[in-house]
Length: 82
Image (cartoon, one colour):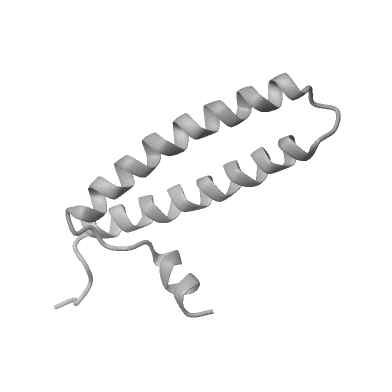
């Protein structure tokens, strides 16, 4: 008999891990664009507005999942214990 977590829990954990990494890439690319002097200030402002909207939606979705008692991502253990 295996003490492995159920497949759905494992899939959810992998999904959360993937979402976290996508978030890091998104944020690093956004910061890069905001610091780029060749991008027009108007475009930077639009990027800030769009990011704010998307991050707000993401935060509400993730908060809803964690209130239900969903497990943390595998990466959270790495961040808590450097």
